[in-house]
Image 1 (tube, rainbow, N blue to C red):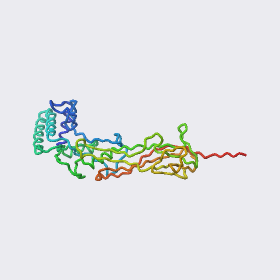
Image 2 (image 1 turned 90 degrees about the vertical axis):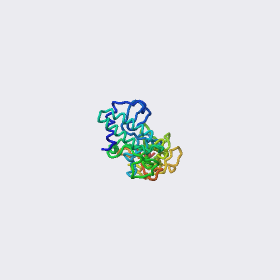
Image 3 (image 1 turned 180 degrees about the vertical axis):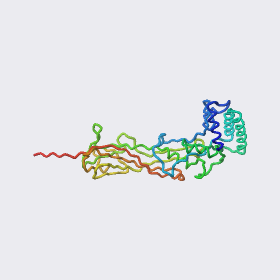
Image 4 (image 1 turned 45 degrees about the horizontal axis):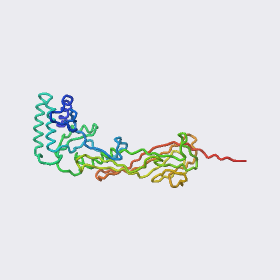
Length: 327
């Protein structure tokens, strides 16, 4: 078992009992053993990665391609030398209250840690990086296999073989947090009493996203660690086109890159439409509109170049046009 696992186990036991030591924490820090400002300690290191952008709402709905899946655990910059000293002191304070054996272990760990960080006393910036995990079993398993913290120093290059968070990792995290809208669309002839109805041979116009709906445009998600300028990455989702399909018998389906809203007097070929060949005698037909997206990143090393589709459906009753003979 690594010191990370041992330390976290000790702190998890101690936390329900002990509050912030005098002069410690109370700064909103969420690192292992740190205080939250409310007299509580947390025994693990929470991710500092934050997400923003027009394509982020906290409910991701598009799975990344296999090569773009984010890692389950990583090291991220946490403390400068003074901060690391304070973190070490706070951890010992909590740990050593558990009994004689814990007091001995806590003191030994405390002295060893101070000795380990001493060579980096004059290095500026957050040179001490802490193990961080996502909320999965695979992420938590990392604490049984890796050290809790490491010294890193200056900005490291992107290297998929190491565990240091970098721009490529952030791009993959951003990709995993992308939310794309379900397409909205309207049909013409319009619905009457909630039922869409058209006729064989008539161009049934399809407007995407439909009157009154916001236009479909570029969306993005940025993942970043505040205070570390080079640790940021953005993914961008660009709408590439619309595909209209139906389970009904058709003569013609006209698809375009965009399907503008129908207006009176509009020529059918200026928009998108379906021309049905037979009536829906066995029940209504289903029309499916699929919005195609291309998702890329500003970090080539992330390997993100996904085609993503989102679709929605409406049903429509198709009748034969009845002719009336006078005689």
